[in-house]
Length: 71
Image: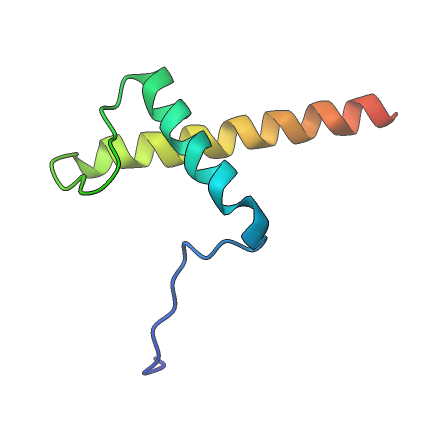
């Protein structure tokens, strides 16, 4: 294993960072997870996982719609 650490939360398009952050809070609100700016150590790993998983689901749906429109 490498001695350097890597962050799996790296944003590949830095210009999208603010939009992704806003999207995270919108998704959390939509699914009822009390995510707040700053420290969220009081949330369970399941709650955090729901937010991330639902974000991915919504991003895939959006991309599928774009792809379908191009056909």
